Length: 379
Image (cartoon, rainbow, N blue to C red; front, side, top):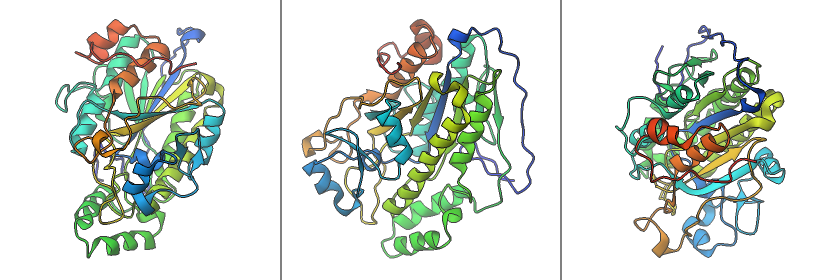
């Protein structure tokens, strides 16, 4: 069996690992909120997920790659058409897109950016533990669950955290496919053939995807555990395959459909706790503003976060939108990041989990006093 902290890969019939949760009845019902963090590994193209409407600069940069029939949210932005359930959450005030956001790491290495996001510091090597684990320790009660075959960095540390992974059918190693995709994307003669070969095999052969779609399965499992009366208050789910150097429209139509199905599955499974739950959907960075030569986009900086759940103050767009005019782009190629993801996480921990800001600055996000908690995220 191949194991990686970045992906969960299990052979057919692998035994599931399940830790029994301790009794959390000591927690007051008024302090029983749930937080699920969903990390989409690979760098999600926020400009494809949340395209600006009637924007001449966007039309010039994206051309035919711009999604058709996007679902309008307001006068300025729309959602990708695959996000049908997410659109309904926005209409109910339970989805909040946050634009132009990124970790403090602003380079283009997947692994360094993910490490920075997960360790909760200003750099890739800033801590050996994860901020969600340190959050568990600061809460002084409860546990955290990572739906993953191995403990991800974000959950490593002295706090009470465990992992659970469902048995999955043996499939092509998504790490190998993702690395091959990057190599083939650089070759104009072979990139198209590689993308067509993946498509011809169906969803089970796509980068980061197993038959049956892992993300909805993982989010459904997280809901089942977190909805239990003695279940974990913090959860983590990860998904790979969002590195869209080529054939982006087809890949993201499928992947965003899986994300939408995952949101629906979580709400269905977590109905008893939905009104006191917040879900933070994040990625390590965004993509280039312009299309590359293989109908995809390359590693960028400014990205997108989505908050969902009954506890979220949604039905609006948050963040500081810098625009896509040439002078506004970072290094002339990327959406400029105007918000630090740590500010988003701080806002959730203060307003939703009711942690004191002093604990955030000293323990959960060390040396982050200059990063203010983003206000108004929670109802």
